[in-house]
Image (cartoon, rainbow, N blue to C red; front, side):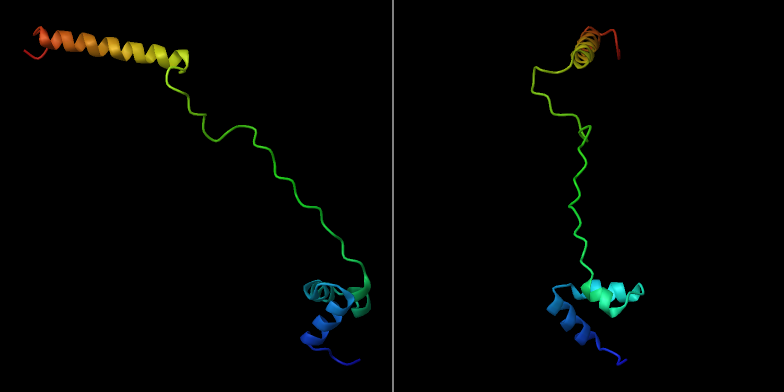
Length: 95
C-alpha cells in the first residue's frame, strides 16, 4: 500500500463530496480509507438557544409608575429632609 500525501487525501475527499477534515479525523480514529471516504456524513441539527427565564436587569420604569415601596421610601426621605431643614433654619440644630 502506498502512503498518500495530505493533498491526495483532500482531493479524493472533495471528489466524493466529503469534507477533507472529516476524512482526516476518521483516519485518525482508525477508520479504513474506504470507510472514511464512503460512509455518509451525519448532519447535525442546529442547537436551539435556551430561553431566558429572567431578564438580567429589571426593566426601566417610567416616571410616576414606580413601585409602592419606592414611593413610600421617597416620601420618608422628603419628610426627613424637610424636618432637618426646618430644625436647622430655626436654630435647633448646629447652634
